[in-house]
Structure formats: structure tokens, C-alpha cells
Amino acid sequence: MRFTKMHGAGNDFIIIDAVKEKIPEKDFSALAAFLCPRKTSVGADGVMYIVPASNGGDFGMRYYNSDGSLGEMCGNGARCISRYGYEHGLSGEIQRIETTAGPVTGVRIDEDLYRVRLNDPTVIDLHKKVTVSGKEYDCAYTELGDPGIPHCVLIYPEWDNMNETELCKLGSLLRHAPVFPKGANVDFVKIENENEIKAVTYERGVEDLTLACGTGCGSIAALLSLLGLVTAKDLKIKMPGGTLSVSLDICEDYVNNIMLTGPAAVVYDGELSFCPSPTGDAVVLSSSSSGS
Figure 1 (tube, one colour):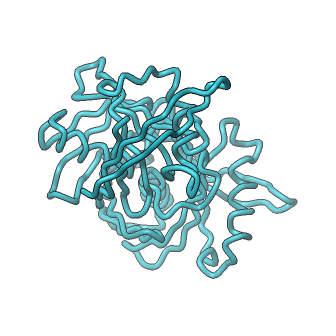
Figure 2 (spheres, rainbow, N blue to C red):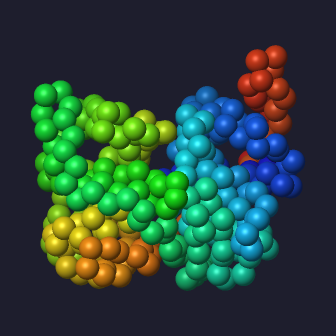
């Protein structure tokens, strides 16, 4: 099985053309859970599968988190798969991608830089009260797309001075809070000035802090703009893995045209040989990789 390892600002992915590799969709979850563990497998925050388009797009994308759960969409992943689609002849310099959360359009800016239009918000709650461990937090909440990618944005300026273990603990508590029936990605935010934000995301499905989160950046920009806490149309969001740019249009109590720009880097192309075990799990027999 051939695959490509990519990352967007440190948020890393395994991309597999499920059509060419003839991988049935029923195996997507188990294969993702097998491939994503670090040190014992390829290692990644998630797996993206190329699938056929069904509504006029260039190709479809199925995103699975590292725990094997289906994700609605992934912003950094969308940039990476946009580059993959362009470089593998699946699309031109504009990439029309069909995702679980709805259509996403990518644009090639140069070899390593891509821009994607994120799904529009379908749910917005600017003041969602979340109580964990006896303490109430005033969060902003949104879902991008339909079904929506859930994001809980918490202004928490002290996050970058906290012990990582403690920050992860708080992220996990908020992520599993009962007010979020399907869970939520948790974005900790520090506003540095009107167009620069420092943030980190505790991601649902990864169950850890990640180096960057693209839909998190879009959600942060949308919610802080609606709250009137930032006024710039173009925002720089600094995450541990790098800086991403977000631009959007604001219309009274709504935002749309959320554009996420950032790197889409190829790490390597690889090949795995595996077979199913009696339990249905994948077992690696041999592997090889080549730099790209």
C-alpha cells in the first residue's frame, strides 16, 4: 500500500488514494487507528483517504482521526490534500474537494503554500457556559460545515505559561463536557494585538494538544471577530507548529468566506505491506519509504 506523509504547520497526516489502493471504506477506521500511533507505526495526527467525488468535485476526502474516529473535515489536512490532488493529477491549480462537512475549495499559491476556503459556520454561540471541576468557563462555540466541526474557543492568556500536562487535563475536561454532546475541539487563545493571536488546540480524536489546527484557526478568527475582540479582516494565528493566516467576511452577526492560508509540506512517500489478522486489525509485514 502506497501512501504520502505530509504536514501543515506540524499537523501531520497520512494520505492514501483509496481508489488506486482498492481499500474499502469499511476498513478506513481500523487502518487509521493502526497507522497513526507514533513509534509503533507510521505516526500521524490523522489519515486522509482519496475517494471518488459524487457531486461534481475533483475528488472526495474522508478524514479519520488518530483514534480511528471519523472527522468531519480538517483545515490543515485540506491544504495538504489539495497539494496532493494537484501534484497527482486529480485537479488543477484550483482543487474542488468533497468532504464529510461539505465542499471545500483549495488554491495553489506556490509549491508549498496553499489556501482553502473552510466550511461556513452552521452553529454559533458566543457565550456558552461550560462547567468542569466546579469552575465555570465562558466559551465561544461554533460548528463549521454540516455536519459541523465543533470548536470551543476559550480566551485563556495564561495557556502558554502553563505546564503542558495541566493544559492537556483542562483541554480533556472541556472536550468531554456534557454541554458538547458530540465532544468539541478546544482552542486556548491569547490575543496579542488586533491582528495577531497566539493559540493551541486540544483536538478531539487525537486527544492531545497538536502543533496546529486549521479549523481551529478559522473558528478562532470567526468567533473573536463576532465578539468584537479583533477588528482586522486578515489575522495571523500563531500556533506551536507555525503561523497560519485567516481572512474572512463579516456581516453583522455572521461570518463567511473563511480563507485559511498556510504551508502544505511533503515529508516522504512510503509503501507498506500488511495483511489482516483474525481480529481484523492490520499487521505490518514490511515497509519502505523514499524522500520526496
